[in-house]
Length: 576
Figure 1 (cartoon, rainbow, N blue to C red):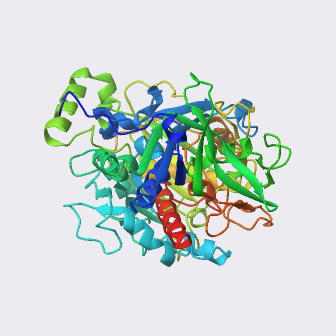
Figure 2 (cartoon, rainbow, N blue to C red; figure 1 turned 45 degrees about the horizontal axis):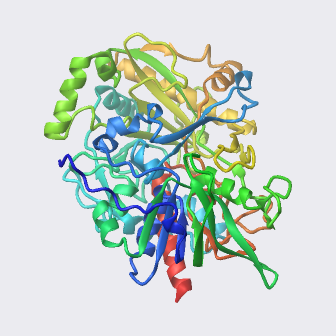
């Protein structure tokens, strides 16, 4: 590796305000990097990508284990407290985290590549979202994907010619993960090797594919879609401007219609208060994510009339509403230190050995994802004792359990040796929160009310999830796993289970649905139409997870890329 890396080709804030662009992409996260790539494939089209964070290029940004430990790196993520969650113990706040820099969440997440079940997208179609059935979106998943694995036969439902590297990571690294998979089989949950196979049944224990290349490096959408060589090749017509915080859309009134003409932006660090303007001939596309996208709209006077920065430009009650996340919590066990990722924290020698293994051979703990298994179950298939009911699948899973080989509590509870957690995630929550402005200051993080458990129907699902997790732990012990209770509900009564959820619930950083795709007059008002155009405003689209109509049973990086791919095609069709 050269000690003198050529700087990544970015432009200064003032340079982005010179001239005019065909398209301006706001936000260089998981979706924005994909869309910027696709729009700039045509060398006659001029594209500007504005990203508030930086272009992070250091070696550690691609080491899987190190780059996932984002909580201590202020350059990797935005971190701020949620609004007090009224249903939780002491109305406590939770730690909000979003990606910071090119690649967004795909540069700091746990690298799981999951599309979700075909029935999720077919449900969108049944609800009237034309063009969004699984058959119609599957090709967009495949287009971006390059499945590269020497461990698996070629899978016809995966893409092999895309930019984004996805691989089968082989057998789970930790013995406890094997014990967990075996316990699931004992309980009636079959083991599948590819949870992205469209034929995957609803109730399973499955192995994740991960966005890690064959050299053992994280493959974020920044690395995949805007690598340095491509950015250099296209720099005459693709301008990438980092450190640029978009403060508002520039909206004009033409013949009685609101038309977006460009964006206002300033330094993302707050060191320079000067406001710049970039102009768009054709369209502006918001790809800033389910938190920042509604914030930008609200700052622009677009949203609920009593919640926007005045003057009101377009009343859209759905902006910032319907915030959903996969509520998570876990039961935890003390385990020998060597059976968990805590070994690299507690043993400097082991950390050095594992780092050497990674650098020299591309193996070991620094390569291993924090979890490699997903246990997907519909709560209707779990009885009151926490056992799986043997019957034909009747619905999309609303629970995901994951074996995680470290302390999953947030903030972390004390422990002695190592920790094995069984995370319980609520995948199809009934509760909905909101994103609103904290102030008119565009650099201040918005108020995020996660509203976990505000719909009491979510309690019943979580109770069953915790009971199933405990049955899995018991089966693991029967198979010889050395598990000692560390963090458990007092009993399995409804009262104690609910109290445990209120005490331990946390966010899993899977934010969505705040600018949902639905009609403007829907009972839960939509913000974009089926072509991702913002209702009532010309030349403006949204392409990120904020448009998801209802939360899906999947980790969101693959759906975000799919949405960007589909948006790119729709823009190109409309430009002809």
